[in-house]
Length: 263
Ligand code: CIR
Image 1: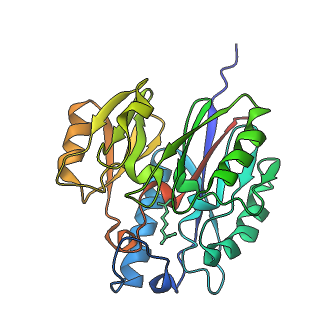
Image 2: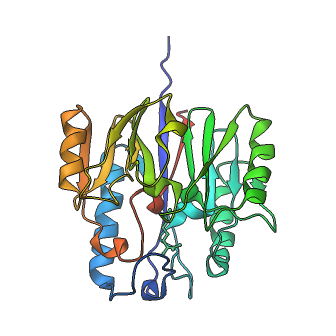
């Protein structure tokens, strides 16, 4: 019998030379070193490659300061991709380039005005999509998403998010059935069905990890929480993203992961 294995693709987006003009919500603006940011982004992509992903980089365009944070522009499911409508007006110009590439992989659906959804507010675990109701993602956007994905058997659960940029600033998946969580930023009870690993209390921004297969790509700036993951038997691939963190970026936001059956 022939065994079919899923081929993983990671879609990333080129870092903009305008990254210094990025959107900021919670952090003060400080200088971002573009060369170092570029080097760190390349290492992040190398980490994805080392975990078996084919990395496809979408070029940036002039003025797309936040283009590297491609996660906010789309939700990719096995059956379709939803082109989102990020909260900040400045980020909507990113959508055309992403749509152009995703069209090659999936049928598309769109979130329309007045709905807004940032991909950082969407945490998918199997057929459940947790949607953060945040300063970026509104109830209309979540309702549109609910209707789009219902046809494919997904349910959408709204989770209120107030003290951080996105839902996935507060909670992300680190293994099948296991979430990494900052309980000060999101209610634990929304995630009762999961095994929960708490971040270390000294590392408030540590709840964002990218799960790729059995491994997680994880910022080297959170060593205490990283130790907790390692102690749980999780394979942690550290990456230094210090420059993108100054732009309020995290590890999930720099890629869209999709799997397709190998031919
Ligand atoms: C923004 O504020 O939109 C960007 N400077 C950072 C977006 C980070 N996105 C994410 O974590 N999903």
